[in-house]
Image 1 (tube, one colour):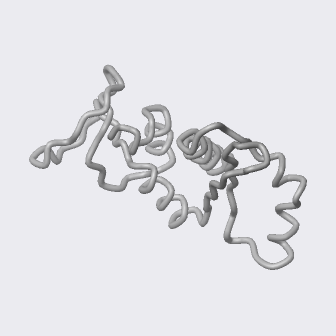
Image 2 (image 1 turned 45 degrees about the vertical axis):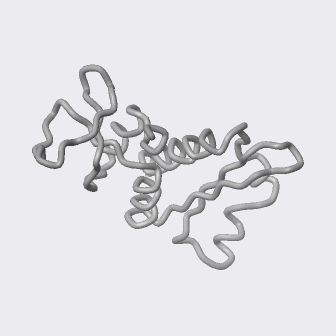
Length: 130
């Protein structure tokens, strides 16, 4: 089940970007171990880092930053490719953002899970650099 949650490093980066959605799991900063929050333990402290699911993180980027991810299987290379889109662009501006050559340069990885992680890392990088 821990595959559903972002890794410690990305959870920490999301916190730094302002992610503050309720999460059912968190990482202990002392050992970076994923732990389920007790439903009776509502106090969060400086010793834990919320661990959102990938779905929560992607939703947060859509709602807060208007960024969307796309993961697709590339049958010609038998790998998964992932792409990030800034949906605040429209019309000609959007077309200019993504040429086919740029689209083909996007990273390709062996598994869907690697593509999910790659998307998340890229989204974090984009928001940090804004």
